[in-house]
Image (cartoon, rainbow, N blue to C red; front, side):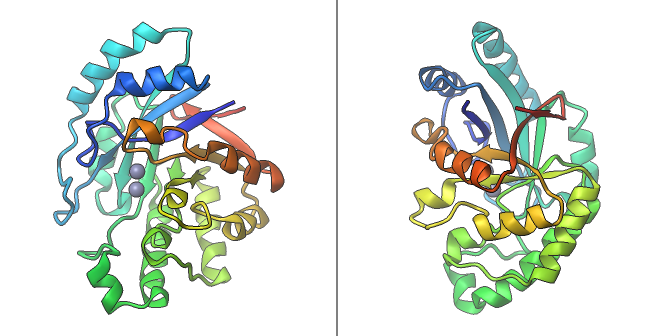
Length: 253
Ligand SMILES: [Zn+2]
Ligand SMILES: [Zn+2]
């Protein structure tokens, strides 16, 4: 059963992909569900600052969804950047009929892990700041799944963490009944591991975490459900459970 719960379309600043093309491809792949999760960013440094328009998205979504009725589950979501910093905006947006909300940290203030920042901060120093932002955002909550939990890995190619901080992050996350995703986009960038890899997933599990969503983070139709089977295998090897979300409710598969 293939579910892709992290997909960007033309309603995200950095994608031109067409909703309907994704759905047609999903049918070819015999997918069970697809959830569109457009970028929502309010950091002024972000290229997509204030780009997302929920009314435009839902107009197209509501036009297309009925065409594929009973063929595949088509779901609506967002990937909201730095939820703890723009919490009022997140709450307002949550009034729209979303099925699923990802909370992601892309920015630490005006810093993104681009080449310039990587020259200034060692992986260890950057991750130390990053985990503090993650901690703040899981304490605040308001979303369903934390996106690509070890995001700097996509740029630094390595990971640094201390177990105590991870335990604290998972404690708050699980208290709020939130989950994490396995994001497979790092594999397409040539890295060895999904985000997160098995090490962090094991710590998640040790803290009582059980449920996982799977997302390709596709920005192009050709990346839909990419490496989904790898993510599913990791989940089954660790004895975790894949879930999807409908109407902001977890659905165990
Ligand atoms: Zn992201
Ligand atoms: Zn994304």
